[in-house]
Image: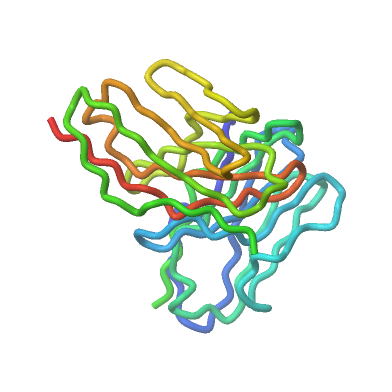
Length: 114
Length: 110
């Protein structure tokens, strides 16, 4: 497809379970970002991948959160031992790395931890 | 700590008026500035980007940047009810992650 694709679109999980969220960026985009947005809140930065450089993990809220990007394309965000406060919409975005990176967002994964 | 600040609103303007949305940022090294519109339940979509001091116009939208004051604004002329959304300011330092403000909720009243 032409846009950023995220799956699943909705995920309901029990507290304590692990979840994996997937992001397929736009082909050719070297930068990939993960954000999360709680209801009525702004975007909270989680992690940033740029090409083959070491990712910027400064936004990950705890060591239960991790992400990888295989082959410079698809990314997976993993949340271990989910907690209710992890409930949010997780948004992925990708962009070219140029003077004006213009990230394009996927439609997000709505995670609900019950 | 890099921060981007916006008034949360809601900002209410009558249809046809000019809506003015403001954003300040703390990182003087910031190089790129963006405005996103987010409708309720939807993902953000890019509407304006600006990189140099001054004004940048695109249709009814004008972005204004003042790096000395660390201030960026968005003006929406002839506001329409369809412009009602949350507007997110984002700031980027080349090659680094985007930092988003909390967003300003705009309501255009018919």
